[in-house]
Length: 349
Image 1 (cartoon, one colour):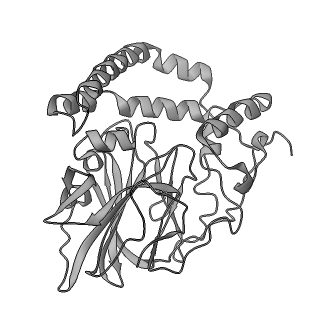
Image 2: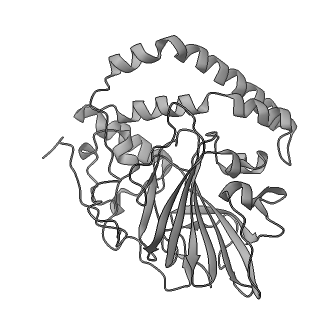
Image 3: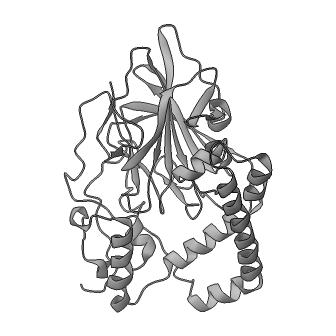
């Protein structure tokens, strides 16, 4: 019915075989008790001071960008960035995104968003913008059957994304971009060591705001552990990745580790500014970007089988997926830096 919020079946993805009755889990569940008046009353006392701090920080950072034309930010700039109230602002943005739009406003607002960020409405399972109650529903739109064919290669792209960096992991160090490194063990919460005749590889994939926001499995594997690391919510744009050392180990993230046919395998969903919400099918009770920070949480998954192309979870705007895996030393990536990928396209063999 025109103007009615629809619950649409997921027609473009397959769920885990061992997790029943998850239809609709990745759909938006708006807080029906939140109104514009309530949100305004709740945030009035801290909103403007927060915005002033954020604006001052943004001005300082822009000056650093102008003066630091290459290389990572100095420590003082990173310290300032991590002191900004990005987690609060992300929660506020999430509340705004859940406010129901009047039917007459949906096409102008969502159509403008789709035009600015290059969303392809022809491949959406529902291309009628009036059927999306709010911005968040549109962010997590589903695709038509067959919109993302899965390549037969050993590993495929887990998401619509842009390739930021890829290569071998040497001495526990990963390059998030050329010349800017971080340690794998810090990001994953465990150390991965390749066996004889094998090496560790990684790839960093950036999801832009206009991309399809569900992320999938790049290969057949079995997940054994899920860890949630609360942390900062900094931008994960290509510029931020070039400037903020250890970005993906600083940000809030959900890490799933396990085994695939060639050894250890890790799948990392990294939160970002305005993307505090990460949904994972392996843990439907997981809450990210909560008001109160807590210690990292670890959950045993047994040996959860995940097939190539299965949906793993979803973001609420755009973010980053990092894959770290053991493979034969002859493994070769078939992508290039900066390449735009669709979910299911070949990554390597």
